Image 1 (cartoon, helix red, strand yellow):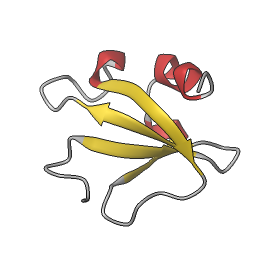
Image 2: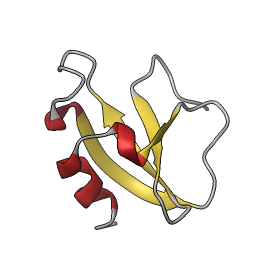
Image 3: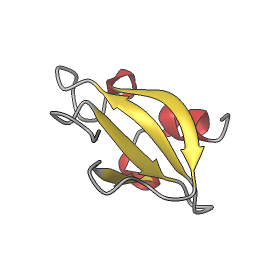
Length: 68
């Protein structure tokens, strides 16, 4: 089962790990509440999910990526 309708994405951290996030489409692009970090971290992202780079998400979300 892959990602449906863009609800979920993986963010690639600078250390090479990927973290799963929930993307809320109704929020502004630069709003930190648009991304909800749900985990888990993985070494590779599934091919059916969109992948974002760490510098594409707001600073508050970047901090949460490393708490997992």
